[in-house]
Image 1: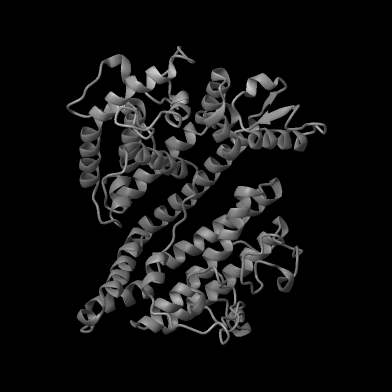
Image 2 (image 1 turned 90 degrees about the horizontal axis):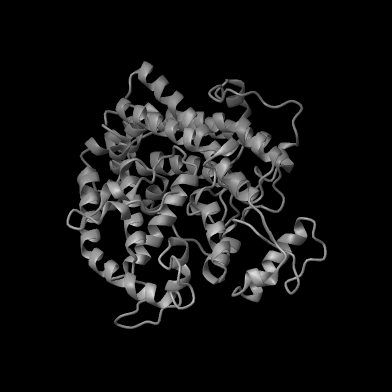
Length: 491
C-alpha cells in the first residue's frame, strides 16, 4: 500500500487494455485445481515422457502416459456426438504428423501452421469428449476419481488451444483466423458441456456433504467450493430452456470477443508513420531508430538504415513506448498517442457496436444466473465484493488527491522552459515524469490529477461494466474540481 499511486495507475491501464483486447473463455477453476492437487514428486531421471501435457504445464505429472485418441469401441459407440461440426474432408494432414496432437515437452510454435488447426482441434475435442464420457460414467466423489481426471481434460484443451491463440496474437494470418473461426464454436460447446456436467457437479456436492468434509485441508475445501460455484455460473442449475439461452449467449459472446480483438489487432497494424527527416526523431536512442529502420525495410524500403532512414513508426508496443518516452517532437508524440488510444473506434474496425452488444449479452447472462449485473457475477468468484472494491478505490483517491495536485505545478515548471505550451498534457506526462529529479519536491513517480482520475475511474468502471468511462462521473466526494477539468482521458 506504500507504493506510489502512479504505479497503481499503470497497472490499472494495463488491466483495462488487457480486458478490452483479451478474449474471455468459459473454463473451470483450473488454476485452483492445480494448486491444490497433491502431485507426487519424481526424479528427472525416472520421469517418463508426457502425452500432450508438456513441462510448461503445471499439471505435468498428472498427464503421464495419457492416450490421446479414445478407444475404437468408444468411437463406434457414438460417444463423440456432442461435438457438432464434421471433420473437414479431405483431412488437411494426418493426425500422426499434426504437431498439435503429438507429444511435446515445449510448445511447438515453430511447426504449427494454420492447416493444423482444424483437424488438430477437432480430433482433440473428440478425444476429450471420450475422456469426459468415461469420467461421468465412473465418477466417484474422491480426489483421484474426480479432481485429477477432470484436471487432465481441462489442461489438455487449455494447453493446445493456448498455442493456437498465442500464434494468432503474434503471427496472425487470414488462414489462421478462418481456421479458428471454424473450430471455435465446437470448442465453446465442449467447454459448456464440461462446465454443465451434472454428474461432475453432483460428485463435488457429495464431497461437500460427506462426513469426511471436515477432515479435508483448507486448500481442498477451497477447490471443491470453487468448483461447485463455477458450475453454477456455467449454468448447470438452469432449466433446459434457460440453459439453451445461456449457451447461445456464450457462443455469441465468444464471437464478440474474437471480433473485438481482431479489430484492435488490425487497427494496430494499420497505423504507419513514415519519417524521412532525422530532426523529427530527436531524442530517440539508436536502438529505437534501428527498430524503425528495420520496420521500414520489412515494408519495402530496402535502403533504410538507423542513421539515414527512412523510418517507420507503428503502434506496436516497442515502437509506441519509445516515441512516448524519448521523442522530443511534441507533435509526433501527440499524433502517435492519439492514434494509440483511438484504435478500433471508427470506420470498418469500429468496436463501439461490439462493446454495446457485449454489455447487453453480459447483462442478459447475469440475469439468467440470478444476478443484478455482470459485476456481481465477476465478483462472486472473488474474496471481495463490488461494494468493498468501490470503497477501497474511493479511499485511495481521497488519500492520493492532495499529493497528486501538489505534484502538478512542479512538473509543469520543470517542463515549461523547453516546452512552454500544454506542459501538463497527458501525452507529455510519461516523458516528463522520467526526467523529474527525485526529491522531497520533485518525484518521478508522483501521480498527476489527470492520471489519477483516469486510473480510478477506469478501475471503478472495470468493476461495474468491464469498460472505461468518463472519470468525471466518479470524482472523489471531497475534491470536486471545476467542470472544465472533468473531461480527462477521452479514448
